[in-house]
Image (cartoon, rainbow, N blue to C red; front, side):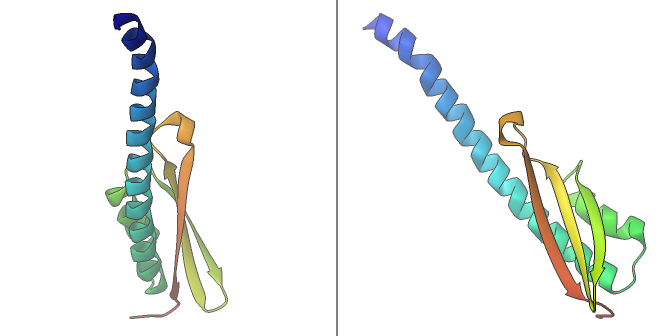
Length: 101
């Protein structure tokens, strides 16, 4: 009984760690999506680049952003680490109509 437990315990721990990591990555992605949408609204109103970036990095530390204009639409793409190296990065894009108030 003890031998089977000793063999199964590492596998159970691995599944638990990956499960918690996936939940954390999902929560981080939701925060990143909200922050990208907020940053897009700020950028569309003509706020400074620093203010737009701080809207994202305040919600998700370590995130990077890319602001682009597509016609009358301003889009912000934010990228951040998922938390676990095995899960890679998470990215989110938010867009807003340019000149919006």
